[in-house]
Image (cartoon, rainbow, N blue to C red; front, side, top):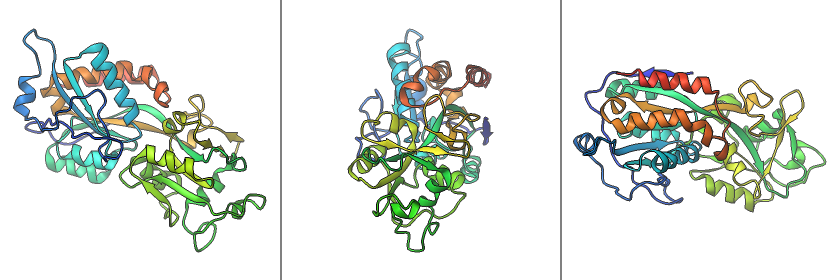
Length: 339
């Protein structure tokens, strides 16, 4: 699925993202320079091609923390294997925070773990941002536990979702494991997840628990590495996030196999599929491209070409199931046809 929004803008603002460590909400840049000052559109145009005609310059990306490991690896591959004269700045403010920068014309790409909202569409139209949304891979929402949790290895989807929904099990939201099954420990379940800046949070609320209120006391975090640490430190933890963060920390986390009605299914690169066994918890993840950046900055177009020619290579290594090659090639042809 691909969407396009907005009006043709008079110009595109290309800036350098301020990048920090894991404690910074913007995250870190993959293989990027340390220049934190914003560059002007004129500077981007002047540096777009070097004296020998090769493409150079900067590309600015922000958005989803879930998509960050994938796009970071793609950016590293591009700068290492394709064009070291281009600096790709990749940050991870979260889908909503990254989209806020994008709709204001501050970035060339916005990674997202959900589709563009109506409000964001309206803001792009108001700001004259012409944009297109492209799926880049498939992710599986993953339910994680402490690695020593040997009782909740298999659950029904109804059990999983009732734990996160306010009032679904009892009125005070102090849900015990034994409230779910009598034989499980008489210990309170401590729930964890990404905060409201993240598309993963929005996908979980909107699509998986149908817009119901999240259980009071759920520990919501900006940084995914922090979530991994919290679940690893809590014997009675019960959390959710994208498959890649489980896959890359599987020695520190337990995972729940979920019965959607036809037997228990464990998320994996083989089961994450929009039409497969894990389909109810599978979603597309996206990148959005500012079309004026694409037209005005040759580095943006060159990097976009690399993304859709190579993202399937990097997807499995970062915990994503690849999209069909023909779908990526159709999207590449669409990008290359933009004038």
